[in-house]
Every structure is written in structure tokens, then in C-alpha cells.
Length: 310
Image (cartoon, rainbow, N blue to C red; front, side, top):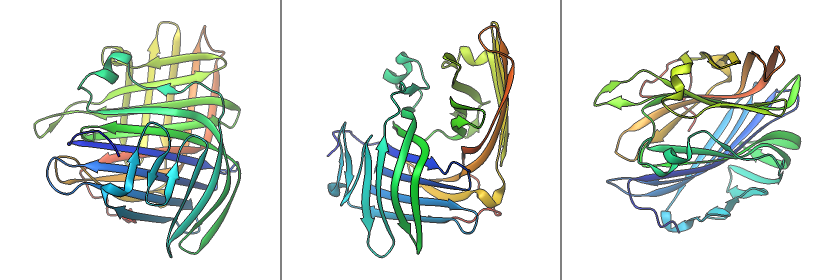
């Protein structure tokens, strides 16, 4: 059981793509302790497949969940840094082995921010380049997972960020060990959304280029719409400019309940595309591309061209 007090939410998730980028999986184990109302633990299983996306969500009483520091368990399902296993009767079954990459975890915020009340939402990528093998069955589809690349992730906080775009690249086509974790997040002052703040961690050619603080974000920029996002930063002699996009047909819509009541609309594609240019003394000028990108938008708005699957 968790020792956290309401309001609180926590999510442990994994995601992985086929080498050719045609399919992707996304599994989440989440805990919700609302300020008012019943707490719950949810298991989410998603398959991105251009022949037909699938998404399943199953809720459990919070007493059936154990969100310790190691393996997370909800009902008979489990998830940690080396394996994900579980079954939702008549709906989904999975048995995945996760081979750690040995790369350092990605921390998108400053150490001070992880300890502070603001921002209310925290995130860490436990492994940005893990390998996945095994089997997933969901809603009549059987997926053989053979040497897929992805990540192991952990999110938590007292409430969701009011609005954001989130992107994650676990290897580029022409730089398989290069990773990018990026967010353009909008805080709120009452009912008014503030301008976005863009934070990122980019690892390439043995170097790390990062903006992790609100002050540092004066040197970065990001602007997004469904489903196109342009971003960049210039700090000293290092520069990055990029674009992440997804076709609406490659997006799954989900409902995220929030800790303070109400709900958010989550629109996620693990089949998005990213193209970036990097330059500066730390990097040789180059263009990097990937079509195995996770791109997520959280908003209050319902987008009519994307079906809500869970």
C-alpha cells in the first residue's frame, strides 16, 4: 500500500515501439487518491496499430494496489524495471521482459523542484532506452514483442498539470542511442492558463543538453496545437530546433480523472514523428529523425476527430 495522502496520483508506465515504427504498446499502472470521492487503482493497456488501435482500462479498489518503491502491483498485474505481467480476464494478457539499458535515468526537473510543492506534477524516466521482449494479447489482437525499444517511466504529484504537450524519443533513426524528453507545460492562475514553459533533456553523442528550470526556460520555446509542436532552445554555444507531429488517426483518446475533481482529456500517439536540428561546439551540426515518438497532449477540451477509447 502507498503511504501517500490525498490529493495524490501516481503512474508507473512503460512504452515501446517496433523497430519499423508501425506498432507500439503502452501499459500504465495508476493510483488516484482524490481530495473528495473514492480512491482507485487503474490498469491501462494500449496498442497502437494502424489497422486498429485498442485501449483497455480496468479499475480496482485501492486495497488491491501496492505502490512501493520497487515492483508495483494492482490485482494480479505487476510492473517494475525488468518485467511487466498481468491479465485482465476476457480483455488483455501480457508477459513482457524488460532488459535495462544501463543508461542514467532522466530527470526533467531540478533537484530542488522535485522536493518543492511546485510544480505539482513530477516525472522521471527510469530507463530511456530499455529493450522489450514477450507477448501482449488485447481485444483479439496478439502481438509478439521482439527486441522493441522503449522506456520505463514514473509520474506522480498532487494534481495534473492544467495543460501540456509531452514528447519522448527513445532513439533516432540515424542515432539509436540519442534520446529526448521534452514538455511544454502551462500552469494556471485561477481559470486562466499561463504561457507555456518548455523543459527538456537531450542526450546525444555523449553530451547532455538540458533546460530544467523556469529561469532556464527563458532560453527555450515551444508552441503546440493538436497535433503539431515546434520547439527549440539556444543556450550558450548549443542549439536545438525541432518539430513533433502526429496524424489524428494515430492518436488514442483517454479520460484522466484529476485529484481535485473533474477530468482531463489525454490524446496520445506512440506513432508520432520527430525531426530536429542540433548545432554548436558541443555537437556536430546534424539533423535527426524518428517515427517512433510518443507525443501526448493533456487538455480540458474534447477533440471531436479523436475517439475516446478508455
